[in-house]
Image (cartoon, rainbow, N blue to C red; front, side, top):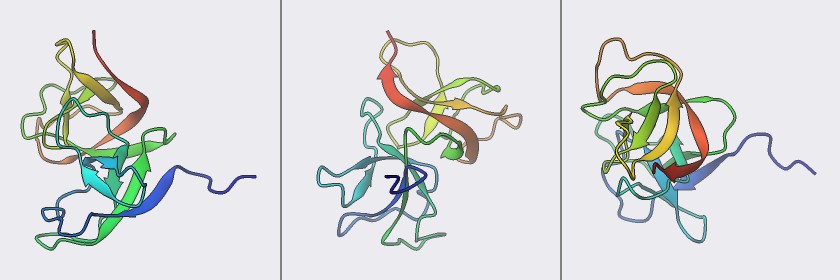
Length: 141
């Protein structure tokens, strides 16, 4: 029996969470009980997915948003780091400490979480970027 066609679920932020107004496309971890999600706090944490359609926008924190699971089969928007590096179509993207992503550099231990679906021709950071999530994020050797 198919319960849901896509691995996207609605999750709230834990009580008292702030700073979620710019969370669209950021990496998150689901709580152990699966009821809430939190922004990724370390580049070495394995994310459970990215935030889509957060409640709060432009300086207003909301209650939660959609958690797009890592095994989502489609193109999603991920939030680029302030200094994203050179990103071309097909570039591996790695997790950053602020729950954003940047171009992989090949450094051992980087956590590849997505693959770019378009070049970042402007070189701009802190923006949303089209990517495919990696179903099982693993550190580079």
